Every structure is written in C-alpha cells, then in structure tokens.
Image 1 (cartoon, rainbow, N blue to C red):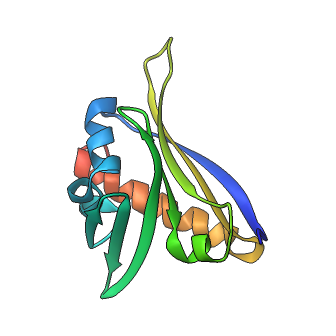
Image 2: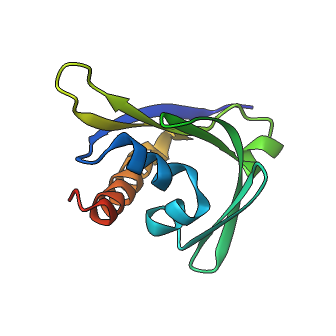
Image 3: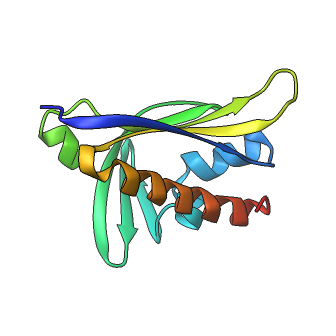
Length: 130
C-alpha cells in the first residue's frame, strides 16, 4: 500500500554528465557521497550508514542519464515508491542539473528534502562543484 508522498527536487551541478553518472550509478561512486559504504551484487545494492544497512533493488538505469532504485523494505510492503536520480542537461545553456524523485511519509517530506540537500551538497564537494 502506498501512503507515501512523491516529491521532486532539482540541483544545478557544475560537472560533466559523464562524471556525475559514475557517482550515481556505481557502488564506489555512491560510497563517495551517498552512504558510508555501498556494495552491489547484481541488481541488489547494500547501502551502509554508521553500521546500519539498507538494501535497494536497481529498478532501471540508462547510461549517462539516470538510475532508479526501490528500497527492499518498500518492495516487501508492496509499495510502488522508488527513488530516482536523473541527470538533465539544458539544451540551450548546457547547464547540468540533477533531478531527484523520492517518496516519504507526509510528515517526513521536509526531512527527506533536507537529507537530499545534504547528500547533493556532499556530491558537489566530491565533484569540486561546491
């Protein structure tokens, strides 16, 4: 059952889409900014923060463009929520943005947005774009 609210965010990043894609699609890239450590076995990614683990299934990815995951605990509850990180390049200005789509309980949306802002801030530092 889905009682989570979808939210979307956009972050402008001064870095090449190819470089950004390495950081959003690979365990080594994700462990630089998203979690303390990330392991993967096929479509199953294990994210580790301060000793706690969360597993997510890679639902889809398009090279150089986007990755989409679903947390396993959401999967087990039959939820259709996911989180997606998409690279968007403005055709005219060539500005690069990261588009985040995620879901959270209604009373946790602001917290979710703050978490993503912090995570993307870490990514920008790793990329030298901060």
